[in-house]
Length: 85
Image 1 (tube, helix red, strand yellow):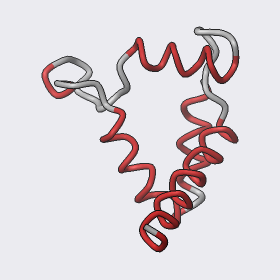
Image 2 (image 1 turned 90 degrees about the horizontal axis):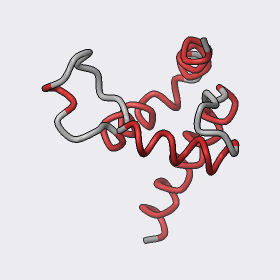
Image 3 (image 1 turned 90 degrees about the vertical axis):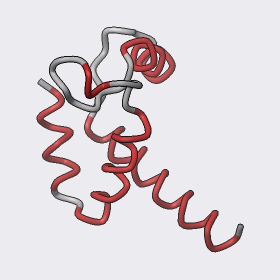
């Protein structure tokens, strides 16, 4: 399962932890706390859209390297927007 690889890849990069936590909350489906498994997961339609735009396949699982790259991009973009904005 690639989700385990993603968690391990992010866990090895403490500088990404705040960014990852923020993205988990931002991308969580509305009302996630009311539905089992009570985890802040993205809405299935959003995740399907992202997999199609990234990999061309709605069933493709995200790659750990791509998630780390995305989190780095978010972190750098946020930092630069605060400094320069």
